[in-house]
Image 1: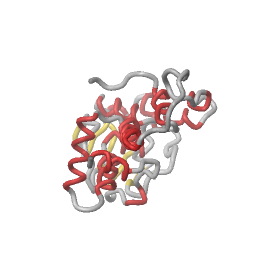
Image 2 (image 1 turned 30 degrees about the horizontal axis):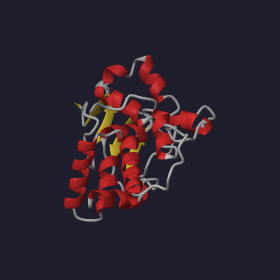
Image 3 (image 1 turned 90 degrees about the vertical axis):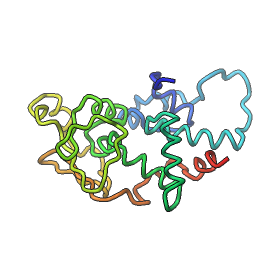
Length: 208
């Protein structure tokens, strides 16, 4: 199955909450979720209370929507989380947060994770001076993230970096505004992980 290419706001409606898939647009009155909060599909039939399975499934789907990963990839992340020491749910969220495209988004170089994934695929960024075009790459402590040098003189670079930081940068990342580069200072702490995702429900879903 290919990547979902339909309206991003439809995924928010399916989850029943804002997932901020379109960046800054999601906090403006232009957000489609604000105008239409109903679940996609036929509304003529009365919807029953979701089962426990449905609640667990929706939470898993929500995490996939936010980070833009496939089911097979998500299963690998979950398997690694189970096999790593510590709390499995936090291990999963820590892996998702360390994705290269997510780090680009967190540093403010992209308005959304979807845009960040596209920019990484196009080879706009370097890790420790080496071209890295794999959105799923797991950043490590000490990694230096920078723009492709030839892009710095372009209007695209100026447009993407104007006004940075546009949002608070997590404590585990360091943004150098003068050089428009970043550094991974540490692994995401428990406080840095997304509180909007109930990782316990995801762990229970894959523990069935």
